[in-house]
Image (cartoon, rainbow, N blue to C red):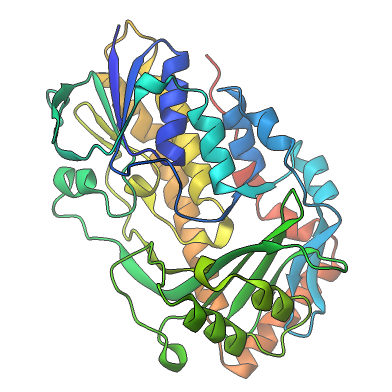
Length: 395
């Protein structure tokens, strides 16, 4: 039986491990954390990722958690809709909804597809040999026919395989994420754009709301890049006060959501991305996956979705347990590089537009969006056609 070593127990790594296991691989997941308690809060699983999750038997479990219903779209600071569609229209167009759920829920669903022996927690991969598939850890060496590097945006494996490639760069944006109880009143899924700032509201199951906010990293004394894409501020009270200041006067329920946030549960991150894209997603027996391969800004909500796509495509091209994967990894790069590079560029372009702060530019942006919205409810959806209609390869 062929053996795969997955470095990283996040969503991409766990999806890859589950997909490979279903194809008969023996899988070992190395996760440096002592538990799979994920860093993060909410996550969006779009129709393309739901279809990918179907291949490992998790798609329907995620669909059951769908809570986004009714109108959704982009709004002005005063609450007026700029573009609007509905969750029902999106589901009808793509055959599936976009499901918002807690990241921890998805991690648990994926981990449940693996046997306990597959997970090695508290284990760090120190070095990888792409020619032999040997992975060095503090507990000794392992050797795999395939090594999946799903070790995140600051991937040590990527750095070793492509030492001349630029490190992730700062987008100029810092972000906050919170999960709070759903307040009274009509809470719609929306994203509100102001002068360089964004606030998103996404209803979750179980009476919760996932909310996120972004602002320029150097705005009004906000900290500049720290080189971390997962910085949790130890002084949650300061972050809550900063959110309340930045979004004071924005439409309801934004101030109420901020006020209800637990001070020690606010996550703050600087947004980084890879630029330019990597020349390949593999070297020898090693395949890069998710943020390790194509870290992108979150503006299209496709970061985790593309990692899930990566995972099921990788399992497909490497074949079953009796197949050596070496030559097939070129097929993995061929299947994934162009698609992810395009989505990375589009996401970064949207990020730049959200940073506009000149009043004339913001007004022109709003007029353009309002005009597009008057042309039909499906205008907002069409831009996602090439993203959401993707389907996993069929054996």
